[in-house]
Amino acid sequence: MDFKAILVETVTALLLIIRRTILLIFYPYKTMRDIALKGDTSQTIIIFFIALLYFLLSYSLRGSIWWGGVVYLVFVLLFIATIMFFYIFSKPFKKETHLRSFIFTFSYTLIPTLFWFISNLFLF
Image (cartoon, rainbow, N blue to C red; front, side, top):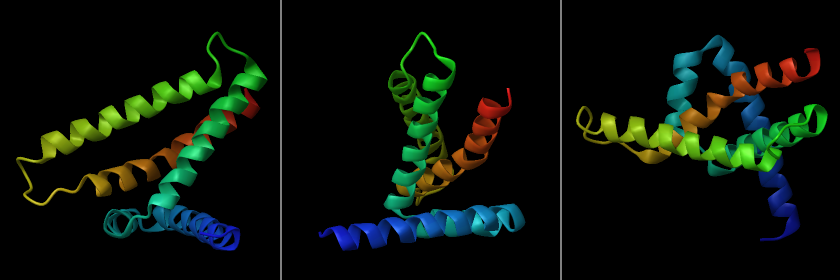
């Protein structure tokens, strides 16, 4: 894959994230269903990259005992544990359960949390 294709895919994923974030405000149920059915891995990667940037930025601005990368790793492990919990316990209630839909929908639930954390980082 060449650089131009990667750039186009990244910009498209960013625009879709912005569009879906706005649609989540006005049509949350319909938008989450759309995300669960038509999720894209590149959008999830971008959301997690933004989370990584937040953890690194918060470490550099506030300082902490733990480096931001370590906190991010713990965050990712907790995210995976949460997804697996809901995936395993939803299996008995629904025959066709896909792990990908859990990953896509739960990654979009991070967006309001990131807004909150970033605003607290600068306003506190």
